[in-house]
Image 1 (cartoon, helix red, strand yellow):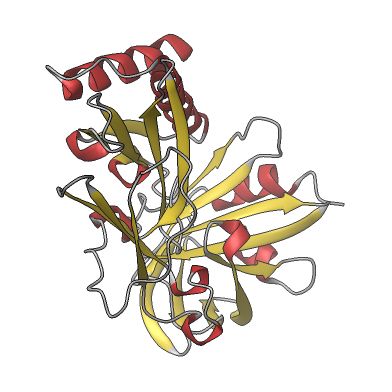
Image 2 (image 1 turned 180 degrees about the vertical axis):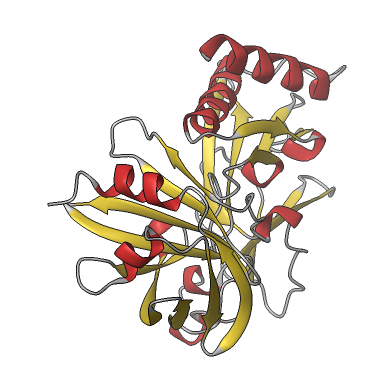
Length: 301
């Protein structure tokens, strides 16, 4: 509910600020919106103490606010905010005429604030695909060091051989409970969400553009851009190729329009052994899958 989300954002941010300046209304509203989004996905928001850092970042003697969505947990919908490229990080910077200006870092794999003179330094870690170097795509994180000599600084160059900030614990996608449930998504068709096994955190079946798809999210993204999934159903094995899609929150996606995978997942089996690239992952529960998949894929043409 909106009131619950609002109460959560105001109380937590006020508690974190303590003796510092009151968080700007825009930051409180932003936090409320993220908490509401989590609830819309069927999750429970939990704002950690490290969600907000209060520091004078631009050297004007007033508190600024740094917010990292890696530290806003969404229990039950763990990938609500973050993907393989990291999590959104934003700053609210005090303006000379009063009020605050929002600055978006984009998706980061980690960020550290280092005190310094005359200004603090913010060392930000980026996924290799965001480093502007084709040789880095899918490889190690790069870093850039930001200083706010203005509230809208140009992007700094890559740091030379800088150590990478430690990735937040939230970067490892956490599993959801075994079994399948149907989740309503505002403004879109519902999603069938199933708990994973082994290296698979969870699966999601949905309609997009009238076509059915299955998204597979891993605890840690495989290095390759495509994986082979194997399902040992009682009626016979089914295999499928899943391709990495950054626009799907870093999941690996399988088109379901052709083949038997959708029907088998929603069929009579109560569980199925799952493998990824030939490596056994364990047993995937199919409890509730028939009803959930039927509801999620009903809108597909």
